[in-house]
Image (cartoon, rainbow, N blue to C red; front, side, top):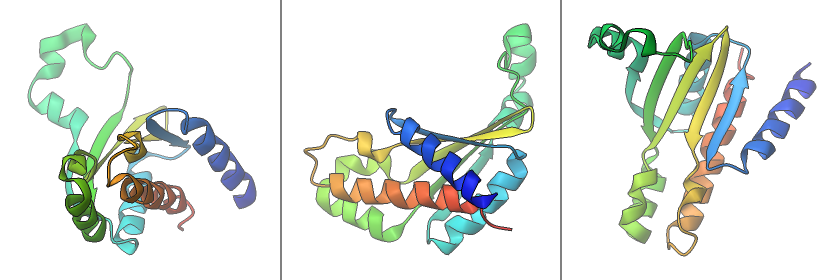
Length: 155
C-alpha cells in the first residue's frame, strides 16, 4: 500500500512541477496532515515560526457575515497556513541575494474539503534563474517538498 501511495505522490509531484505552486492532496483531515507536517518539519530543522487558522480568523473578523453568500463559495472546511524557515538556507540566501528572501521563510497553506487536505506551497525554484541564490532556493524547495511527502508516511 505504501508503494502505491508513494507512486501516486511522485506522479502528483511531477505533474505539479509544471506549476509554480507545489500541490499535493491527502485523504486525511487537516489536523492530521498538519500534525504530521509539524513533526516532520521539526525533524528536518524547518522551524515553524507562525501559524494561522485563516478561515476561523475570517469568521472572527465577521467576514462571513460581511460577504454573506459570497463567503467561502469553494466550501472549504479549513484553511490553515504556516511560516517556517531553516537557518542555514536563510543565511545562505541572505548572503547570496537578499532580494530572494521573499521565498524564505517559506509559507505553506493547507485547505480541507470533504475530508481531503491539499497542501499548497509556492516553489522557490520559480525565482529568477540568474539569481546567485537560485541553487540554494532549489535545495530548499527539495527539502520542503520531501518533508511534506514524508510527513504522511509517519505513523
